[in-house]
Image (cartoon, rainbow, N blue to C red; front, side, top):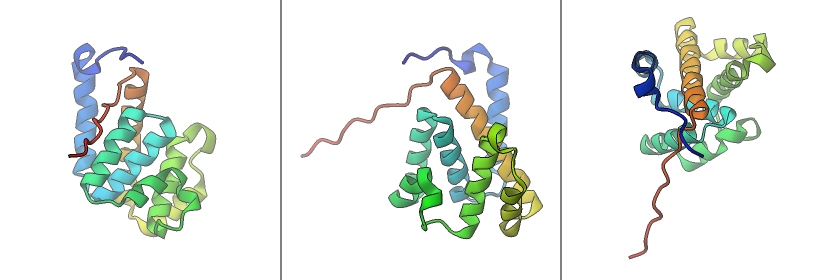
Length: 153
């Protein structure tokens, strides 16, 4: 796989606009775990290897457990996630898969039990933002870095 283009060079203003949206998400008041959950789950759904690699590493760096990270792709089958996290993941799935789900009322109602209207707005903007990044990275074929294996001493 070869990169198709570098958006930062090809369209600097567009890249800066997406970065501005990302900066908003990072300062929106959502917790680090919630942001990781949104970014990792949407990236899994969208098949964005670059973003999955990045968000797994960031989740680890912020202290989230390997099991919490690993079960994200099968969250519906795991009792690991709290009702609040499950509501958030359901909304990520619904909004990321919008064409197929139509963002159903039951997903929204589950979210309302755990989050304020302002938090729901910020969550939805965060979902939209990672979906933009996923489309840029997959569409332009951003390669994820290959980690060097640890060498035994």
